Length: 545
Image 1 (spheres, helix red, strand yellow):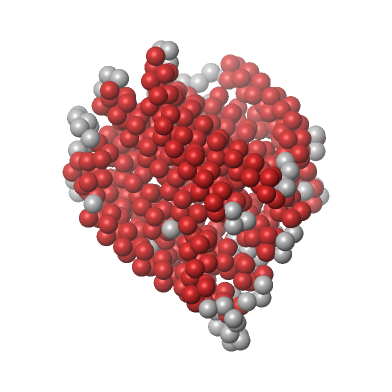
Image 2 (spheres, one colour; image 1 turned 60 degrees about the vertical axis):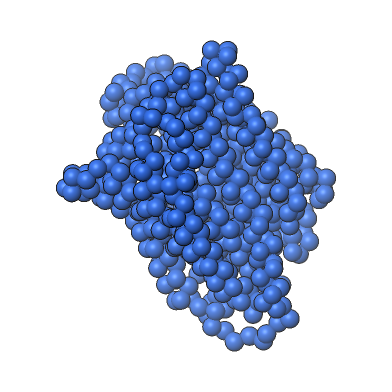
């Protein structure tokens, strides 16, 4: 299995995740049409709770294992590396079973916490049922993640990325086929259809697990899993402590992100209800922010996910060898890639929010309005992910705790006050919830940047310089998109009209942005001219080199 360089690994992982997220976006169109607004809200309740408990069961172990393995591999401690993988698998299996039991048993309590005394929408019994259906996925997904972490610790990104595609394809097929058969052939209720759909997470996870284990088994020798080596001086107890020590910060990061979403879900739902919004509108707005808007913005947030897969082992390797210039270079490179890729995507989706929302969920002025504001959260989430991952890679655990908890508490404290403030000024109250989340992420980002500069002398001059240059292609793209949005009519009630409108404007806007960015040297500075030439050669089938 081929190892990947930092930029190549980042691009492979990001492209894989982008494809996975695009598939995750596309299946929503027929699925949402089948289950409707009420079913979508029920799905969102189960999925958001599942993500939190998945974070608890994973306990940051996959990335921690990847980090420990890369560290031992860099130091040439092969025996310790292999034992770390085995200990990680045993630990994750035990935690997964315990968390599954807890989620299954306390599903009704959680459902009551979510809905409170809300009347007219989904019932506590419905939410309890779908939470129990999705809980089975916790038995396989964490184990899969640890196995992928072993490969990522060797900078082997491609096989891990393929397993993500398999997981997503199987999951989507299960969701669409299962819910369709349940509603149209078995004639069961909406609750049963959503329950079958969320169970698809288990089916997808199991398929990907079988694939990744088959690959590891095939390349045992290459991965040092059947090579006889001399025992080193690292004990199992030391390995266990190191895994746990590395995992705890990741737990906080993952759970903080999930709790951001959970807090928004509960606070928005309760606050809108108290402000006089009916149950259907409150559920629609809440799940648009916490789930369905997120389905579309996945393509933006996937950039940070792909970045972390490659960034963490590379930063750990440079940190282990005390190559601080390399650490600074790779961190700045990560920030530059996030900004170059995500800024045009965020502004483009904001400007095209109405036809984009109509493509996925049908015409809705309210839904597109919510999404046009919410999409900016994805940019700050990406920056938060990269800065936090770097702190963890450098063993700045206290900084991770403090910065993440600061953002979490700030979001929680400001959610309701900001919603009430916006409502007081006759503005949509849910904008206040998005602003509160952005302020929470921002506080974590700036604190992390300050600590990295103060403790390790990291500088961000190249990022600031690149950001200034980026204003020209970004501003030009926004102007072109606004012009074409005015010139090209769109029928929001017709999906094909929306798809054509979004496709034409996106291609024109992206072309302007990429052309100007290339001519100004921004793309070559960020990705490297050699790698750009390689991409251009592949895209033109070797005609341009």
